[in-house]
Length: 99
Image (cartoon, rainbow, N blue to C red; front, side, top):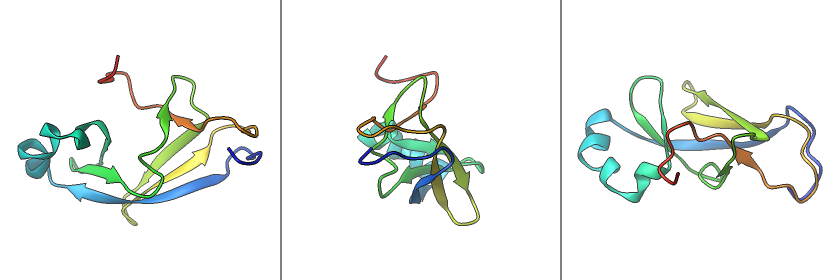
C-alpha cells in the first residue's frame, strides 16, 4: 500500500473477461489462465482485468472481494485497516495449485 487505507475502502473495481463453461473446459484450464480465474455464479469462469489478477494470496487476507454479476466486475475492498507499505492480499481458496 502506498498509503494507509481505512477498513471497508474500495481498492479496485476490476472488469472481467468471462469464459463459458465449454470454453474454459476445452481451452482455458489447459493454459496459465487456469491459475488466475474466478468462479462466476452462473458456472462461467472470469479473468479479472485491471489490478484484479495482481493480488497475492494470504490465509489471513487484508482485502476481500465480491462478484458484481450485474456489472460484470469484481469489487476489492479493504477487510481491515491496511498500513503503509503493507502488501495487499486476497484469499485464493483452499485447493491451491502452488501448495
